[in-house]
Length: 300
Ligand SMILES: [Fe+2]
Image (cartoon, rainbow, N blue to C red):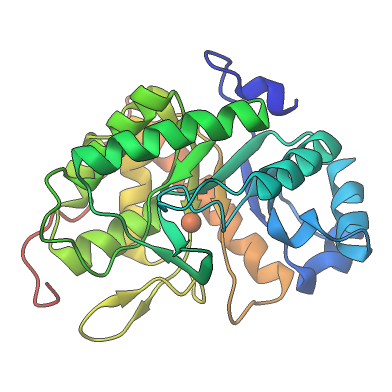
Protein backbone atom coordinates (compact mmCIF):
# COMPACT_ATOMS: atom_id res chain seq x y z
CA UNK A 1 0.00 0.00 0.00
CA UNK A 2 1.68 3.18 -1.08
CA UNK A 3 1.02 6.78 -1.82
CA UNK A 4 -0.35 5.67 -5.18
CA UNK A 5 -3.37 4.36 -3.28
CA UNK A 6 -4.28 7.99 -2.65
CA UNK A 7 -4.82 8.80 -6.26
CA UNK A 8 -8.31 10.14 -6.89
CA UNK A 9 -11.04 7.53 -6.68
CA UNK A 10 -8.72 4.97 -5.06
CA UNK A 11 -10.24 3.06 -2.16
CA UNK A 12 -9.72 4.42 1.31
CA UNK A 13 -6.96 2.40 2.98
CA UNK A 14 -8.48 0.43 5.85
CA UNK A 15 -5.63 0.85 8.26
CA UNK A 16 -7.35 0.24 11.58
CA UNK A 17 -6.06 1.86 14.77
CA UNK A 18 -2.71 3.53 15.23
CA UNK A 19 -0.64 5.97 17.23
CA UNK A 20 1.85 8.72 16.60
CA UNK A 21 5.44 7.46 16.41
CA UNK A 22 7.42 9.36 19.04
CA UNK A 23 11.11 9.09 19.95
CA UNK A 24 10.21 8.25 23.57
CA UNK A 25 8.68 4.99 22.34
CA UNK A 26 11.16 4.01 19.63
CA UNK A 27 12.67 1.06 21.48
CA UNK A 28 9.33 -0.32 22.71
CA UNK A 29 7.97 -0.08 19.18
CA UNK A 30 11.01 -1.77 17.67
CA UNK A 31 10.63 -4.51 20.31
CA UNK A 32 7.00 -4.88 19.20
CA UNK A 33 5.55 -4.10 22.65
CA UNK A 34 2.39 -2.55 21.25
CA UNK A 35 -0.94 -3.40 19.68
CA UNK A 36 -1.08 -0.73 16.96
CA UNK A 37 -2.02 -1.52 13.38
CA UNK A 38 -0.16 1.48 11.96
CA UNK A 39 1.79 4.61 12.87
CA UNK A 40 1.78 8.27 11.99
CA UNK A 41 5.16 10.00 11.68
CA UNK A 42 5.69 13.77 11.68
CA UNK A 43 7.12 14.31 8.19
CA UNK A 44 9.55 17.09 9.14
CA UNK A 45 11.22 14.90 11.78
CA UNK A 46 12.38 12.49 9.09
CA UNK A 47 12.84 14.63 5.96
CA UNK A 48 16.33 15.90 6.69
CA UNK A 49 17.68 13.19 8.94
CA UNK A 50 19.66 10.23 7.73
CA UNK A 51 20.33 9.14 11.31
CA UNK A 52 18.50 7.08 13.88
CA UNK A 53 15.02 8.60 13.37
CA UNK A 54 14.92 7.63 9.69
CA UNK A 55 16.46 4.25 10.45
CA UNK A 56 13.73 3.61 13.04
CA UNK A 57 11.01 4.81 10.68
CA UNK A 58 12.22 2.48 7.94
CA UNK A 59 12.28 -0.48 10.33
CA UNK A 60 8.76 0.34 11.56
CA UNK A 61 7.64 0.73 7.94
CA UNK A 62 8.92 -2.77 7.16
CA UNK A 63 6.26 -4.10 9.56
CA UNK A 64 3.45 -1.53 9.53
CA UNK A 65 1.74 1.06 7.31
CA UNK A 66 2.84 4.65 7.92
CA UNK A 67 1.04 7.97 7.49
CA UNK A 68 3.24 11.02 6.97
CA UNK A 69 1.79 14.00 8.86
CA UNK A 70 3.25 17.42 8.07
CA UNK A 71 3.19 20.53 10.23
CA UNK A 72 4.75 23.14 7.96
CA UNK A 73 3.16 22.94 4.52
CA UNK A 74 1.49 26.29 5.28
CA UNK A 75 -1.17 25.68 2.68
CA UNK A 76 -3.05 28.87 3.59
CA UNK A 77 -0.13 31.32 3.44
CA UNK A 78 0.16 33.95 0.73
CA UNK A 79 3.86 33.14 0.36
CA UNK A 80 4.73 31.05 -2.69
CA UNK A 81 4.67 27.31 -2.02
CA UNK A 82 8.02 26.13 -0.71
CA UNK A 83 9.20 23.99 -3.63
CA UNK A 84 12.28 22.81 -1.77
CA UNK A 85 10.08 21.57 1.08
CA UNK A 86 7.86 19.75 -1.41
CA UNK A 87 10.89 18.14 -3.07
CA UNK A 88 12.19 16.90 0.28
CA UNK A 89 8.74 15.61 1.24
CA UNK A 90 8.43 13.85 -2.11
CA UNK A 91 11.78 12.20 -1.49
CA UNK A 92 10.57 10.93 1.91
CA UNK A 93 7.34 9.71 0.31
CA UNK A 94 9.31 7.80 -2.32
CA UNK A 95 11.43 6.22 0.41
CA UNK A 96 8.66 5.34 2.91
CA UNK A 97 5.72 4.70 0.55
CA UNK A 98 3.18 5.96 3.09
CA UNK A 99 -0.47 4.98 3.12
CA UNK A 100 -1.51 8.59 3.77
CA UNK A 101 0.07 12.03 3.46
CA UNK A 102 -1.53 14.73 5.57
CA UNK A 103 -1.14 18.31 6.79
CA UNK A 104 -3.31 21.05 8.29
CA UNK A 105 -5.78 23.63 7.04
CA UNK A 106 -3.81 26.59 8.34
CA UNK A 107 -0.93 28.95 7.63
CA UNK A 108 2.41 28.86 9.42
CA UNK A 109 4.15 32.07 8.38
CA UNK A 110 4.30 34.92 5.92
CA UNK A 111 6.98 36.84 3.99
CA UNK A 112 9.45 34.08 4.70
CA UNK A 113 9.01 34.21 8.46
CA UNK A 114 8.13 30.85 10.03
CA UNK A 115 5.89 31.33 13.05
CA UNK A 116 5.99 27.66 14.12
CA UNK A 117 2.29 27.49 14.76
CA UNK A 118 -0.85 26.29 12.99
CA UNK A 119 -2.69 29.56 12.48
CA UNK A 120 -6.33 29.91 11.43
CA UNK A 121 -7.56 31.18 8.10
CA UNK A 122 -10.44 33.51 7.40
CA UNK A 123 -13.09 31.39 5.74
CA UNK A 124 -13.99 33.42 2.67
CA UNK A 125 -14.46 32.73 -1.06
CA UNK A 126 -11.10 34.40 -1.70
CA UNK A 127 -9.33 32.11 0.78
CA UNK A 128 -11.14 29.08 -0.61
CA UNK A 129 -9.97 29.78 -4.17
CA UNK A 130 -6.44 30.48 -2.92
CA UNK A 131 -6.14 27.29 -0.88
CA UNK A 132 -7.82 25.07 -3.49
CA UNK A 133 -5.31 26.22 -6.11
CA UNK A 134 -2.40 25.52 -3.77
CA UNK A 135 -3.69 22.07 -2.79
CA UNK A 136 -3.87 21.15 -6.47
CA UNK A 137 -0.25 22.30 -6.93
CA UNK A 138 0.88 20.33 -3.88
CA UNK A 139 -0.85 17.17 -5.07
CA UNK A 140 0.81 17.55 -8.47
CA UNK A 141 4.20 17.97 -6.81
CA UNK A 142 3.75 15.02 -4.46
CA UNK A 143 2.10 12.70 -6.97
CA UNK A 144 -1.03 11.87 -4.96
CA UNK A 145 -3.95 13.03 -2.91
CA UNK A 146 -3.32 14.66 0.47
CA UNK A 147 -5.64 14.96 3.46
CA UNK A 148 -6.03 18.30 5.26
CA UNK A 149 -6.87 18.40 8.96
CA UNK A 150 -9.40 20.68 10.59
CA UNK A 151 -7.59 22.94 13.09
CA UNK A 152 -8.25 23.64 16.74
CA UNK A 153 -9.62 27.15 16.79
CA UNK A 154 -9.59 29.79 19.52
CA UNK A 155 -10.70 32.84 17.59
CA UNK A 156 -12.83 33.47 14.51
CA UNK A 157 -12.30 36.13 11.87
CA UNK A 158 -15.08 38.70 11.82
CA UNK A 159 -15.00 38.73 8.01
CA UNK A 160 -15.37 34.96 7.59
CA UNK A 161 -18.44 34.21 5.51
CA UNK A 162 -18.28 30.41 5.40
CA UNK A 163 -18.53 27.92 8.27
CA UNK A 164 -15.33 25.94 8.77
CA UNK A 165 -16.92 22.58 7.95
CA UNK A 166 -18.45 24.04 4.78
CA UNK A 167 -15.07 25.49 3.82
CA UNK A 168 -13.39 22.10 4.29
CA UNK A 169 -16.11 20.26 2.36
CA UNK A 170 -15.95 22.65 -0.58
CA UNK A 171 -12.14 22.68 -0.53
CA UNK A 172 -12.07 18.88 -0.72
CA UNK A 173 -14.50 18.96 -3.65
CA UNK A 174 -12.70 21.68 -5.60
CA UNK A 175 -9.15 20.49 -5.00
CA UNK A 176 -10.02 16.78 -4.97
CA UNK A 177 -8.22 16.28 -1.69
CA UNK A 178 -9.21 14.33 1.40
CA UNK A 179 -10.04 15.37 4.95
CA UNK A 180 -8.31 14.29 8.15
CA UNK A 181 -11.10 14.77 10.67
CA UNK A 182 -9.66 15.49 14.11
CA UNK A 183 -12.61 14.76 16.39
CA UNK A 184 -10.92 16.39 19.36
CA UNK A 185 -10.33 19.54 17.29
CA UNK A 186 -14.00 19.61 16.31
CA UNK A 187 -14.95 19.47 19.99
CA UNK A 188 -12.36 22.07 21.09
CA UNK A 189 -13.36 24.46 18.31
CA UNK A 190 -17.07 23.97 18.96
CA UNK A 191 -16.65 24.65 22.67
CA UNK A 192 -14.42 27.68 22.15
CA UNK A 193 -16.62 29.28 19.50
CA UNK A 194 -20.03 28.07 20.76
CA UNK A 195 -20.68 25.98 17.65
CA UNK A 196 -22.58 22.70 17.39
CA UNK A 197 -20.08 19.82 16.91
CA UNK A 198 -22.79 17.53 15.54
CA UNK A 199 -23.72 20.06 12.87
CA UNK A 200 -20.00 20.30 12.02
CA UNK A 201 -19.64 16.54 11.56
CA UNK A 202 -22.92 16.28 9.66
CA UNK A 203 -21.54 18.86 7.20
CA UNK A 204 -18.43 16.87 6.31
CA UNK A 205 -18.90 14.65 3.20
CA UNK A 206 -18.32 10.97 4.11
CA UNK A 207 -16.49 10.16 0.88
CA UNK A 208 -13.75 12.66 1.67
CA UNK A 209 -12.73 11.57 5.17
CA UNK A 210 -9.61 9.39 5.10
CA UNK A 211 -8.50 9.47 8.73
CA UNK A 212 -9.60 10.38 12.26
CA UNK A 213 -7.45 11.95 14.93
CA UNK A 214 -8.15 11.66 18.63
CA UNK A 215 -6.27 13.50 21.37
CA UNK A 216 -6.69 15.08 24.78
CA UNK A 217 -7.14 18.78 25.52
CA UNK A 218 -6.57 20.92 28.61
CA UNK A 219 -9.44 22.90 30.12
CA UNK A 220 -8.03 26.38 30.74
CA UNK A 221 -11.20 27.59 32.43
CA UNK A 222 -12.24 30.14 29.83
CA UNK A 223 -11.31 28.00 26.81
CA UNK A 224 -10.15 24.53 25.83
CA UNK A 225 -6.49 24.24 24.77
CA UNK A 226 -5.52 21.52 22.29
CA UNK A 227 -2.46 20.30 24.19
CA UNK A 228 -2.32 16.59 23.22
CA UNK A 229 -1.20 16.03 26.80
CA UNK A 230 -4.10 14.08 28.28
CA UNK A 231 -6.47 11.16 27.70
CA UNK A 232 -9.31 11.66 25.23
CA UNK A 233 -12.19 13.43 26.98
CA UNK A 234 -15.49 11.60 27.48
CA UNK A 235 -17.34 14.21 25.40
CA UNK A 236 -14.89 13.58 22.56
CA UNK A 237 -15.48 9.82 22.84
CA UNK A 238 -19.21 10.54 22.44
CA UNK A 239 -18.48 12.58 19.34
CA UNK A 240 -16.13 9.89 18.03
CA UNK A 241 -18.87 7.25 18.25
CA UNK A 242 -21.15 9.57 16.33
CA UNK A 243 -18.41 10.14 13.71
CA UNK A 244 -17.84 6.37 13.41
CA UNK A 245 -21.44 5.99 12.36
CA UNK A 246 -21.19 8.72 9.74
CA UNK A 247 -17.74 7.67 8.49
CA UNK A 248 -17.50 3.88 8.99
CA UNK A 249 -14.19 2.20 8.20
CA UNK A 250 -12.10 5.32 8.58
CA UNK A 251 -8.72 4.64 10.25
CA UNK A 252 -8.16 6.17 13.69
CA UNK A 253 -4.97 7.66 15.11
CA UNK A 254 -4.39 8.68 18.72
CA UNK A 255 -2.04 11.66 19.22
CA UNK A 256 -0.19 12.24 22.51
CA UNK A 257 2.59 14.81 22.18
CA UNK A 258 3.17 16.37 25.61
CA UNK A 259 3.49 14.66 28.99
CA UNK A 260 3.95 11.55 26.86
CA UNK A 261 3.05 8.45 28.89
CA UNK A 262 4.63 5.00 28.74
CA UNK A 263 3.68 3.08 25.63
CA UNK A 264 1.33 0.81 27.63
CA UNK A 265 -0.84 3.81 28.50
CA UNK A 266 -1.00 4.87 24.85
CA UNK A 267 -1.94 1.28 23.93
CA UNK A 268 -4.82 1.52 26.42
CA UNK A 269 -6.10 4.64 24.69
CA UNK A 270 -5.90 3.05 21.25
CA UNK A 271 -7.66 -0.08 22.52
CA UNK A 272 -10.42 2.14 23.89
CA UNK A 273 -10.83 3.60 20.42
CA UNK A 274 -11.33 0.07 19.07
CA UNK A 275 -13.97 -0.60 21.70
CA UNK A 276 -15.75 2.70 21.17
CA UNK A 277 -16.02 2.14 17.43
CA UNK A 278 -17.19 -1.45 17.94
CA UNK A 279 -19.82 -0.19 20.38
CA UNK A 280 -20.94 2.47 17.91
CA UNK A 281 -21.23 0.13 14.93
CA UNK A 282 -22.76 -3.03 16.24
CA UNK A 283 -23.59 -5.81 16.40
CA UNK A 284 -27.14 -5.45 15.20
CA UNK A 285 -28.69 -2.16 14.18
CA UNK A 286 -26.32 0.75 14.41
CA UNK A 287 -26.41 2.50 17.70
CA UNK A 288 -26.67 6.21 17.35
CA UNK A 289 -24.45 7.82 19.88
CA UNK A 290 -25.74 11.04 21.31
CA UNK A 291 -22.95 13.56 21.66
CA UNK A 292 -23.69 16.77 23.41
CA UNK A 293 -25.18 19.41 21.12
CA UNK A 294 -23.96 22.91 21.63
CA UNK A 295 -25.46 25.22 23.27
CA UNK A 296 -23.95 28.58 23.92
CA UNK A 297 -21.29 28.29 26.58
CA UNK A 298 -19.62 30.77 28.83
CA UNK A 299 -16.40 30.20 26.90
CA UNK A 300 -17.63 31.88 23.76
FE1 LIG B 1 -4.81 16.24 15.04
